[in-house]
Image (cartoon, rainbow, N blue to C red; front, side, top):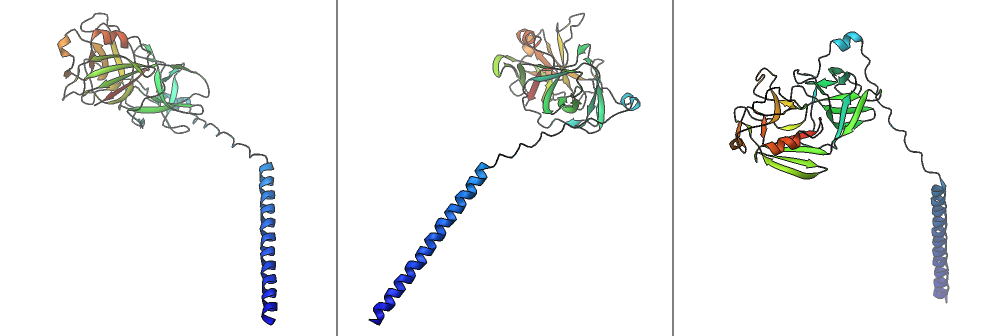
Length: 283
């Protein structure tokens, strides 16, 4: 009898413990749901305000006059190198409508002045990086792959877009022309010799020149790139270019001083793409 009573009391105690635990669990679920409901009822946090554009460093007229011009004739010693020398861009081009200061980085030191023309052609440069009110461009100066930032927040620049891209494979000795990412032409070309090689990296179509007396090409297309071996050539600063060549046996061979010689159909096609169009040369 005593054992039965004790067992009964134990059972009742266990039932009470279980009931208390269930009550606590139900209360926890209710409180949790209320907390979730309150959190869901809160308005979403407002988005973070956009980063304020970095202002350019203000320069005096004396400081501006002391800056070197960024052209195919000059070297910009403080220019930052191209961070992705074989990457395509989106085709965005920039033209300075007045001479513009070139900076090492947004808000950083001034390193050059960019004139509105290059070799009597309007200056058009490929944009390789963008930030609010700033554009990073490839420069036409030595060393190869030089870049600089142009402040666009004050206007005085014009943008355009090139659907074209030129790829030159030095190993295959072939030039490929792409439009909107699709190949529209492919031709064998002549490239630089082992002693005067065609440099590699990404550059751009700097100018289009028509010689008054045609000797080997009716059109010369200078690039924003220079020979790594020749500091000067034929009176110029060693600028690498694309041009025609009358002797078709040269195509497919390494025979030039660094320029890329094109067959007539290739020259005709490249002559019609916009200035500033990106050109990627690989080995």
